[in-house]
Image (cartoon, rainbow, N blue to C red; front, side):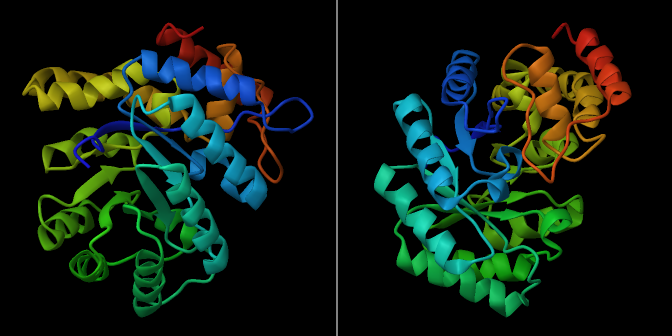
Length: 294
């Protein structure tokens, strides 16, 4: 579990012009990430458009990921769903493949109570013996898992080891760390909070920006781990403009447009997502230019 620290990149899922999974582009991205010093690979999270993939496509994506990584860095597979049976199926598949952890999103759309959230994660933890990282992203799910609920799961489920916090409420994050213990792994899912999260004891970040600047986003963690706080602060502010630009519209539309401009993938998203307008893409290109990416 010590390896589950640092920059764990949430991979995009590349598609061909006809909308099929582009396996070659995807494995090339994984190689680039590992060569650039990324500490871990994650797929099937928000950035990977999981709700647009069938269960079979998600399972195959997991298989390709594990095969491409070849144990060189940890693999965290996004297995969550608002359908418990689907989440269980995907989490069992991740366990069979030997993934280092499953990233399980707080169930979206249904807006469960805190007791419902507890029972969902407790049951999944009991059914599948794999390290589980809760994924809290209230802006997408319409429900926030409270620190007290996370702490209860931490106490009662030995394989719930951490949480990805895409919650902008920093008081909330501090309470999670305080109530769950400093050894509980808390990862930032908010790009502008990657550095602040490390400063209060976070384990790392799962940041979409790492898809474009893998070395720099990894260095943000490396600098803190080495005690180079001034360098980390400088890098935090250097990344700010790009962090903002990637969320001018819904992720991963801007990100896939940028990767297309860089020649890394075909810029294709599945409906109902859409790529940014031509004017917005020109603004994105200008930002990329200032980072030397185009």
